[in-house]
Image (tube, rainbow, N blue to C red; front, side):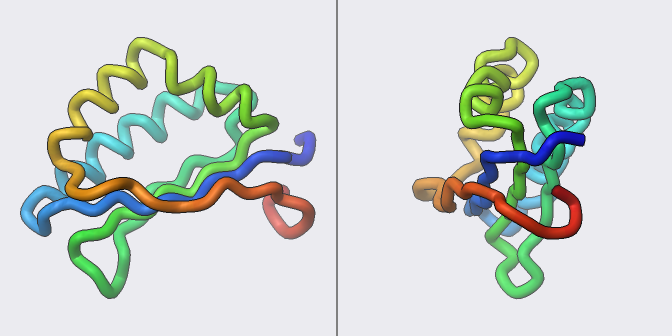
Length: 103
């Protein structure tokens, strides 16, 4: 597997009663990423200390590949389902992975 050179770590905040619904939508997105060769990792996690937060961790071959995934019709549909559940502005960071297990 080639080294990934674009990564993202982000948090999405939602009402506690919507967190499992949001996780389900993001899990569907993760399943779509299985078929995208340029996506090496798409992990959805619940925050252990804050019942309002969901984290998404991604590794890609490039930022362009990540951006292209956001234009896919099935991904757009999932984004449309998730947006009404998200409170506040999503936060996170774009990263340049350089070394480590999993790269």
